Every structure is written in structure tokens, then in C-alpha cells.
Length: 65
Image 1 (tube, rainbow, N blue to C red):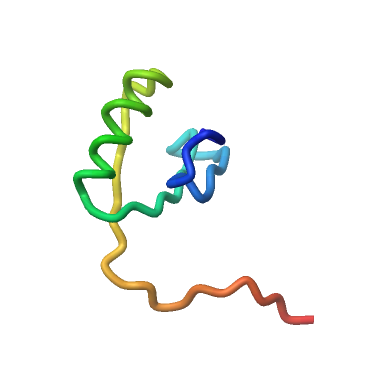
Image 2: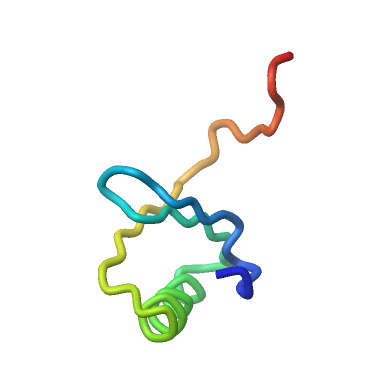
């Protein structure tokens, strides 16, 4: 996961999913390529569920102090 610059975040989860990844890709073809070649073939992930953001409503790293 660390070798792909498109993967911005990878979180180990508790609950329904083992991991949540946040990717930044130019288009759906690039996403599909990463999903098929890297995640399923190289890493060996068997079950992938994908969600695609249509619009960013809020994105901040600010913390109220």
C-alpha cells in the first residue's frame, strides 16, 4: 500500500470492513487498474467494495483548540 502514491490513506477498521482506503485517481480507468492489478492480484484482496465521492462538501485538517 505504501508504494502506490494514489493511495492517500489506509485505515485498519473495526466492524464490517477490514480496511478503508482513500485513493486519488485521474479517472475510473486508473482506479480499475489499481483495483485489478494491485489490490486483487498483487495484494490478494478477495472482496472489494467501492464508493466514489461525487463532490467534496468539506475537507479540513483543522482541529478546534
